[in-house]
Image 1 (cartoon, rainbow, N blue to C red):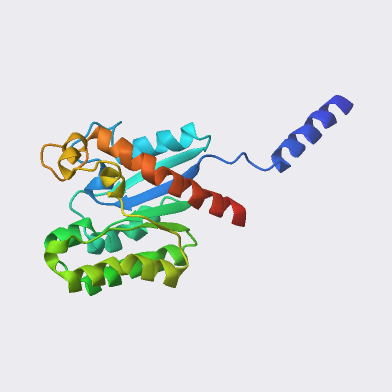
Image 2: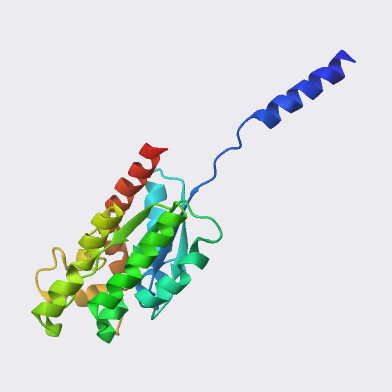
Length: 216
């Protein structure tokens, strides 16, 4: 009888223990750059970032919420779905296709604002990744677009990472050298280019995760 009661007490004690926490679920909301356009499944941004973070000792699962061709409007329409399965944090990397289509900066701003508001409503911390407009749209457009990211980061009190593509430009010197990091279309990074992006953006993501853990 005593042995049976001991087993029962041990079982109850085990049930009372908190469940072991699984890997942190980090959603990456973006476009083809996030989705891994033109690359094998294991060489896109999401798997490379997850591998980099795990090599740094972080138990993180990065969830791919990138859709090729998506604009900020598409991200706004999808953000609820992207967070529906549960997310501990989210990276927002959108805006490149807005630039390609010449979408008005105020439209992009409103869409990103809505994405950040939805994340806040669901209590999901966000790392906002910047995007810079090219000069061929004119200085007024460029100023308006480039201001979107720091303005919204400040308004929503979220951290801001530098331009997604900036690591490709760092240290290359001659822009012609970018070819080594791009696919034949000249727009999307190849596996080596993604690795370079992850090396540049990875430390920003680590700081973001440190900030989340510091608030828990």
